[in-house]
Length: 102
Image 1 (tube, one colour):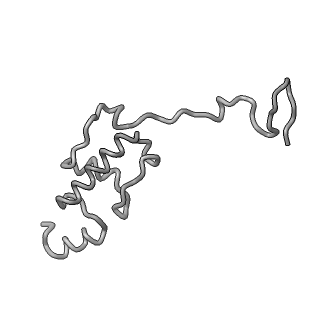
Image 2 (cartoon, helix red, strand yellow; image 1 turned 180 degrees about the vertical axis):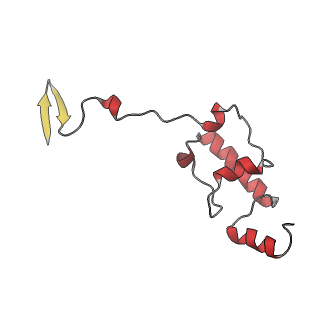
Image 3 (cartoon, helix red, strand yellow; image 1 turned 180 degrees about the horizontal axis):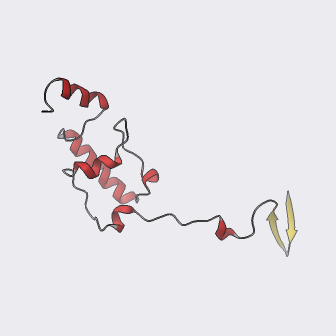
């Protein structure tokens, strides 16, 4: 239900001060550290952006900008193609059982 207050419509039950609700999102962590390019050979850094099932985590979960997310996606796909990262958890178990991970 709307109330009229000082020639403006105000919803009931909402705080009047919007600054209490709105918090600016933190910036891209990669850009704040000065990283401009993502290297597919840096497996430790790339593996932070891959989940437990080896799926690429979306940028909105990591607070990464769209451009940087594209670079990370490309680097992960290149590392997978060159067998630096597994495609699935099953791939990592297969390579260990075949003796390739020694």
